[in-house]
Length: 312
Ligand code: NAD
Ligand code: MLT
Image 1 (cartoon, helix red, strand yellow):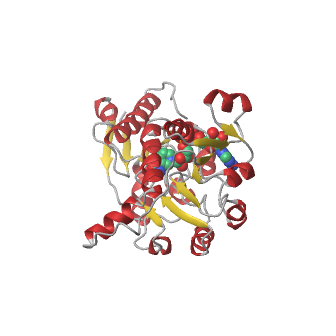
Image 2 (tube, rainbow, N blue to C red):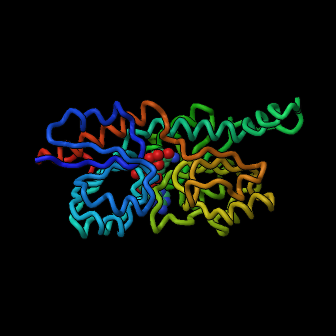
């Protein structure tokens, strides 16, 4: 019996080694498919592997008459209609920890670049200016970092921020005082974190409950001059509210890796000098891409061998 695997987003070639090695799997790599092409082609496949770009909607799942398993080479499964998959008996597996370190490192890079206006200064220098007045930053030492969502990535970011001599306060519905004490950080409600922080970093999944968690009301609770980092998901921050909060001077800066609509070619937030951004690069390292691809590939191989999967 041969099972047909469609890889619809770019995955590390080294990472898909478990699929290439396994007997009875035929791999097709077809990235950048239009919605129509995906709907047409998915019919013949038993497994679909994606990153965050391919939207695995109910329509795609209903068209996928042979599909048995969807592998998400990464953490967030918000691009997959989980209800539709469950209704059709399709298992969804992800790679929950393969990119934790890379995403945490990217967050710290964004935090530091934001505090010291490094991208803005670099742009100015490239434009032929030697300007030492416009890019006065702030130190991280003794500032308070508010972490919203203290899971795998949030906890790594908190530990690294302590290394920068920052005070850390976190909110997570599963965080206890005891755990916070062990980690040497403060804890409180989301309101406490918003009020106390000089920098706020978001590390929740995008869920119904977290969509626009950071909205006009949340900005109103923050300190004047607060700076925000989002390397989690677009949609957790209400982008119109963020735009307004920056223009009004409430928010002094924002570092964004993720956006409500991706990909895009222009974005109103990028017209603001206070905003620095990367195109969803949090997990884009050689190590993370290999690791997440190995994890989901191995789960797909196990599944077709009738063995237990690790990350359903
Ligand atoms: P995780 O599941 O380990 O942690 C998420 C945490 O958020 C959990 O502890 C959970 O309790 C908490 N949470 C849920 N709802 C919350 C709420 N309303 N308020 C506060 N906390 C809440 O996941 P992770 O590995 O830390 O990843 C977090 C998210 O980061 C992923 O869901 C993904 O969307 C995103 N991510 C982005 C990149 C990137 O390339 N930019 C890379 C990896 C992950
Ligand atoms: C994730 O959720 O793992 C990230 O979005 C990384 C990615 O897949 O690009």
